[in-house]
Length: 164
Image 1 (cartoon, rainbow, N blue to C red):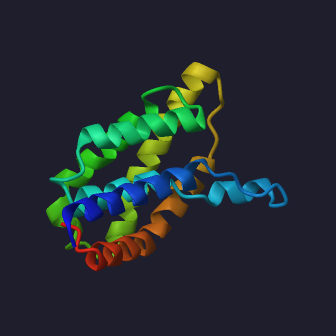
Image 2: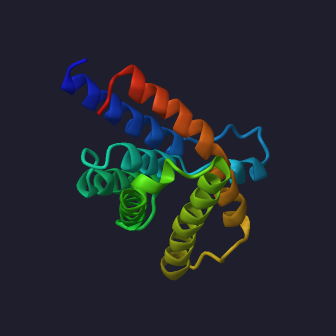
Image 3: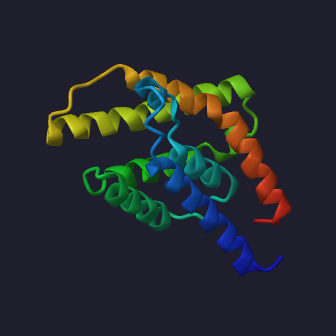
């Protein structure tokens, strides 16, 4: 498979992550189901930071985060900084994560997603006066539980399209 197709596949996965992040749930569902939505871009950026540390750079991750800021309505730079931090952590732990057990990977994703959600909550509190809630713990737990499935699916995509 040629290199442009590989790049397009990675861009499509990032675009799908953006769309899943900004997509709304149907109104017929109760509000608490929204708490169970994972942080899709955190999962995707962490995966690509582990699997392709030399390909996915801070600029591309920051750009995805800035697009997400505009689409979601967060303070500009919030998601870009958070995703850049997630990618940096992924780069630093790249050689170790493959050796971790699934439980350790889930625990690591819980800490990472909790950190991202906490940063977003602090910025939301400072700029918009939004009170802190405990739903970030539920959201972090849900994000961490999605990690194993997302890493397996994206791993198969990486293998299928020979992304390296």
